[in-house]
Length: 101
Image 1 (spheres, helix red, strand yellow):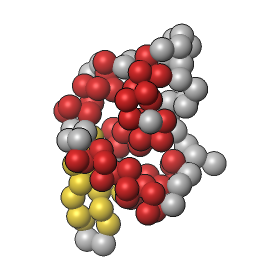
Image 2 (cartoon, one colour):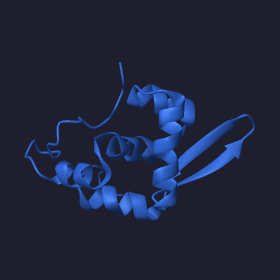
Image 3 (cartoon, one colour):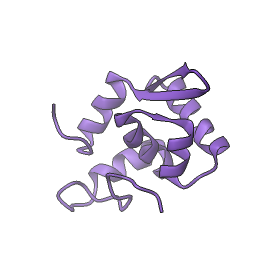
Image 4 (cartoon, helix red, strand yellow):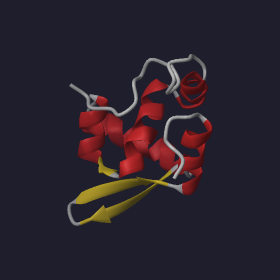
């Protein structure tokens, strides 16, 4: 079972529709979820598990997000670590999917 912090229902944090849908319309449902998952940092394996997709699919989603400068990726030993960028975090905040720091 995927363990996402935010529901994939398209509802905002207050249950109202719209804000998450905007992000999902822009990125697609799975990539929007991937962006949220990287807010805490994760490996490709963790991303795949949390999205309930293959490692190859998770890697492809991460590549698209990285090319859009929404996440960064760095190699740590045998793992690849994905972290959200300030731009990615601003996009999540604008769409009400992460609390203000």
